[in-house]
Image 1 (cartoon, rainbow, N blue to C red):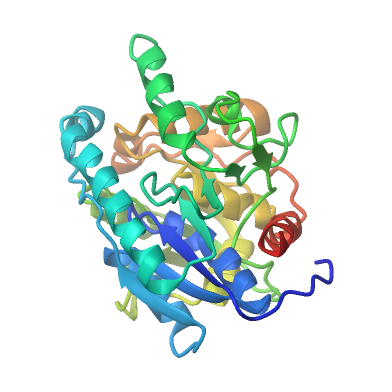
Image 2: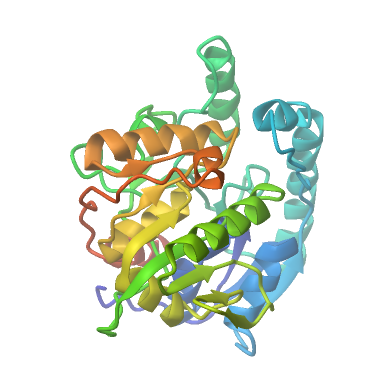
Length: 356
């Protein structure tokens, strides 16, 4: 990172979406970067994302946490996209609630900058506001696509800049068609962004499964991975993604419910066969660590299905459905991970923006 001289006198509001743990995970390096650059940080989120961020930043005197409005989305085992679509009125209301909350918070806390990870209502007309998202194109059917693009352009247009956590468009881009549209005149590709660092451990683990996503799919995947590892009889590690859950060892399987970043890196880097979702933050982690994996999109999540196809076509990654995993029909691992230069580009972009 370049040597930027920033006076420790300003306060930034960082809002993090609470849909799974991915947004909190990828925002953490930028939160830590702002702290290192001398800024006080107000973190706004809800639910598990808030719990996780508090556990990672506990005791830091420069950080304060605030509950912001946000819709709680429910999922079903089947017809996930229809289930989400039915909750559109709730999502729209949450954006208006976020706007009102942000106006009040900026006034109360003297906020100088706003950074929002996919929280479309967290911006202010008088405060420089950045939106971070990889969704420059909504993953919907072609029939709804024109309407969806109008909506996203209106939402994004209220921000001063849009940051895409991805390499520039081309051979090394990992988001594919999802970031192929230009919907804001000031869009920047800030490179791969991950809290994970390459492991220094030389140990190998035959089987590793990383569980993520909303219920009931999270538990379904965990149970299927456990059965698959039991049938193979080799040593396995399941990264279960449940804050505060601890660790368990049963026969050949170790389950890490709330592992440290180092434990996750050791498991992923040491894996001989790795199975995980094709959620965007998971893919950022794979790119950061240079690891290949068998990808399993969350059922009904069009975005993950599209990303899975991108990585299968572009990088040769193996893929299977959750139903195939449940039926123990798992393909051989394959592919070559895309390249990454770590978080350097993103942190430098952050530093330049905070200085201006």
